Length: 325
Image 1 (tube, one colour):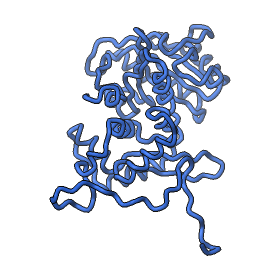
Image 2 (spheres, helix red, strand yellow; image 1 turned 180 degrees about the vertical axis):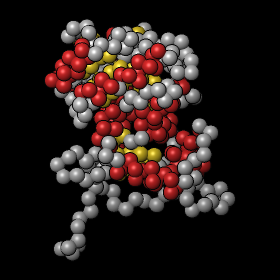
Image 3 (cartoon, rainbow, N blue to C red; image 1 turned 45 degrees about the vertical axis):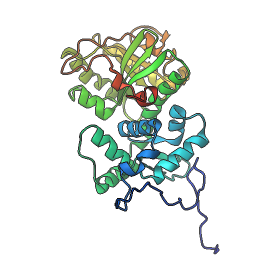
Image 4 (spheres, one colour; image 1 turned 180 degrees about the horizontal axis):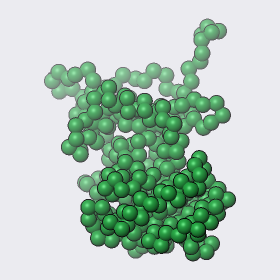
């Protein structure tokens, strides 16, 4: 190697594999296009791979660590599988090198997984050009860190459920899906339904990184109040805040502008890292902390602005829990 040549580097958490080996696909004597199709790679895909495709489709991007936590027993197995899926053209990845900041490997839909998910919904699949623009938008997004933090909230619940047989995140919707499913009345960071034993809590998530005035957080409640008045469910609005002081300031503001028709709960890192645990403080109900399952919640009657209780097909891990689904 010449003195001016830079050594080959691998993203954080990824083994250096050199040039990827050529893709081998099955042939049956029928002339295939040079670009592999879903049919070409179908014999290589497993229920967990389709689950990865579904999660990336819903959540836009997930890190290697997040996917390991949800679906794999150890990081090495996860990395090897993700690399294989990338070589197959099923998923893709990027890394943003920013000095002094974490540089996780971020995975996102590749052409074949995006095609699979679109066709499964009976939508038109994206072209290669459209998908590349979508990927570049994610890579360039100024809100990428916020998106990863939102996804980390849901990942924490999925991880909790892995170790607690009676618990499950039975619905996981991104901002996009939530907005569409509730008649574009609200725009939270996401929506989920958490089940622990015979208790079930639907919720709307507002993840705050401390970048806007407290008053802006209060203003977001107006749309939730309107949804509730028009027949929406009575789900708690969860504010995940960056620190205890900001959480206390929000409760003071809520005391000045009470919202009797809404259920509002808050948490901050000082209360604990597990969003399923006793970390939630209800507005107007003292300082006692409740678990997520203990928060009051009511699905209400299904209607145009209310999807109602969860269905089996809502479960984000349904394909590995029931491979016949």
